[in-house]
Image (tube, rainbow, N blue to C red; front, side, top):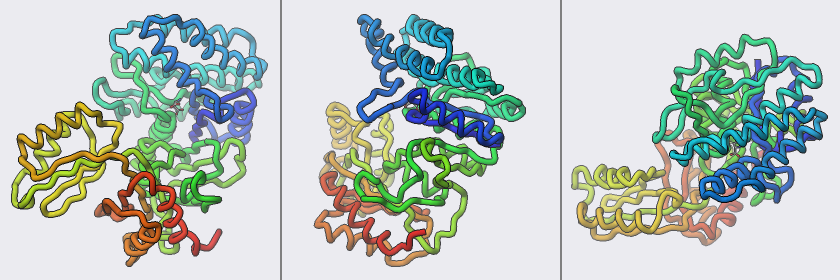
Length: 454
Ligand code: ASP
């Protein structure tokens, strides 16, 4: 039994949904179908999720919502019409969005979550209706009924294992299950959405709970590439990658698969295949537990902008017990997560995603560090990129860091930070954002120009 998930571009129009239905019906083991909200049909298009966020914002600001509502409903209407479905389904969808609009606004986040989820929820209803329209046995299953249980606010949303038993029962159903991605319910029935792109997570949770033989994640590219194809011309396709490698790549900018979606697949050893809805016969990329990493120690190179450093320097810092803990506690109290903490004997840098910072927070943190830790120097600096070499084979390869550093040196870029975790699955270089593309190209040349094509 396979769980397949179709991303936004795969379900953006009637034409795309027909491809989805062909893919599902061509293989009887494709039993559980997780769908996103309609995404972009062309590059300047707007995703339904973004239209819904705009609608929620208008409603919260007390503005007229007629036009924004029509934009959402219009997308579904067009799809339903293109699929030859009668008007009933469009009516159901319009009423559903209006019902959500009228909900209690006292918790703005939950109000927005409920509207955002309308994107996948209604698309699942519509796609299930289309399966039935063409004579297939199919059923829409709401995540509450299905058992997708999530934790309460204010904690970051995550699925709770208590829901798994109920979810596992989906495997026993005979009909095709169409399940909306991106959201679940707390025990008391409150809807919460995952982070953006979170339908991948739903698919992985269902694949894990039902112990599927394979989780297929259909998107709009043939495979995962070894580097960003918008920077590197025709990068190498990755045939097989391990969960840990993919986690590192997804973290550092490979947006093909949500980083949080790997956890359930990894814990239950469910293989994942990334495939293209527009070219389903292409083999895609397999994500598995182990691969032969002797031929290719580095599997991919990722790069991501938008990092800041908090730099703290104090003479004899290494002798001061509790210095690091105290510094990180200040960040914790400001609710700031951190990424890396490279250190020297007398200094410590904390690398933070810039989106978690603002001027006031930075000022407060600096004042506290000055007053409580008495450093010789403390400052924030923004504008960093993290370039990450990823590969399980790096653990056994010698001289790899030297090769990478020399390649970066050839570009003239300065390495601001190097970090290699003890697992040695990744090697991270902090550089200036403006050097990112050049560094990526040079590293790609260094590690991939000699790898034989498959
Ligand atoms: N529709 C949601 C988004 O645009 C979730 C998803 O597509 O996975 O982020």
